[in-house]
Length: 394
Ligand SMILES: [Fe+2]
Image: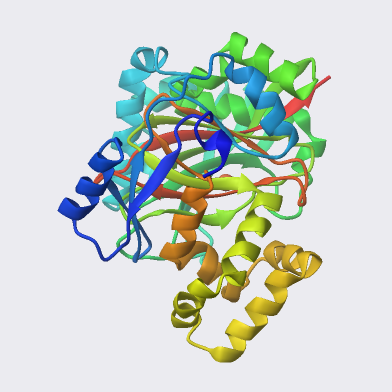
């Protein structure tokens, strides 16, 4: 295991494979002096049992953040927003009820007509039409808003898009994403003003967003790490990761953004997260190890595909390109459905458990210097989290 596995907080250790039962996994966790073992399961694939390692004794978290950030590596600030969560408990429960209502089939726009929301929206935001794109099976509803100053519209075409996270019937994970304009056509980074209005809209609907956005000390510390004067939290997302759900491996690079801050407010999630360089090292190491070949061949079920993977894993620039492709089924299988790969990622310190109050920082500088990550829900209920892109403001 790498030396910094012991010094970076919230690391999780892989204690048993997917075929093991609860008693065996707990026994292994106990023997290693770890907490309760939890089963990692996402979109029908069981990846194994993990347990959280003892708390780290890092004294100066932001000192470590600078080093990890400059290498595009993630960092968890353990319990960073624990103290602020009780002040927003009612709003967190309200958001949970909103998510449950949508999961039960209600329209997000209908639920947002409730007085608790309309009182917070008025008079700044005017809720307009709700629509859903028939061509996008993940979308539940998109609701448009205008920003008002008295009777005058000062910004238009802001939206809150509510979507399922996967196509799986037994994955109720969903998210609310806030932005503006035509998705895929508009350069959102070029319009800071509307990005800031979309952030304000998030706070009207999900006031618990302020746990991050109102924390001036956090902003100051992050500004020092990033070398900027002021920070804005933009392109905000409120996540509800549900049992059997979460996100497959991906990165979140967007022009103009420095990275992502993720705050777990309710429930627990497990993350595999590392820089793209580290991920490529892990892929190369895993594919090169002959002991993994039986597992890989069983996963790919195609000898030609296996040979292609071996060739690509040996060629750094090709591997980099393949990871950047949107849909690469060959490597998607390895990254998202291979228990042995998750065991290796954990052994090398790339797996974390987040509990309420933990905050994770994910650098996203460009497609070569960025943090890749994947998320699983660890509970038998859906949790809640904030995920905001960060950008420096002049
Ligand atoms: Fe992400």
